[in-house]
Image (cartoon, rainbow, N blue to C red; front, side):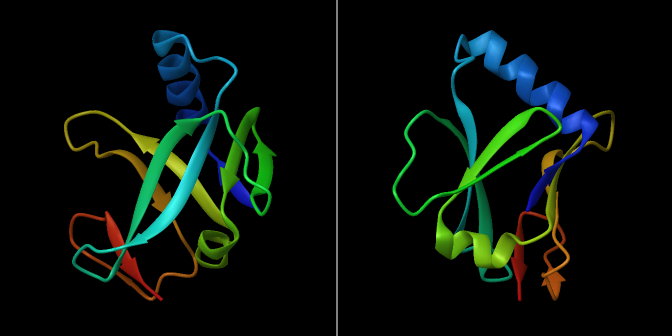
Amino acid sequence: MIYVSDKAKEKVKHLMEQAAVTDYFVRVSVVGGGCSGLSYKLDFDNEQKPMDQVFEDNGVKVVTDLKSFLYLVNTTLDFSDGLNGKGFYFSNPNASRTCGCGESFAV
């Protein structure tokens, strides 16, 4: 399962309305790169692929490919704003370490 916090839900809904893509979903994937070796990628999408894993939490549909899901099990998508806010971020219990900016991780 991939979870979505209340703050992330509010921001996702707002961005979808702003972009007029209300029939889209959130696609989360893990790609190679970043200080710690793996990075998160977050997009809006409207095409599911045959091996996609589909979740819905807190009213937000989240889709990921099978390979990425192995790194994302029980991860929560969250959002932080304010002076020290960093936008969307992931609370990933599978990460053994993260970089200082919080955008990459290792398992």
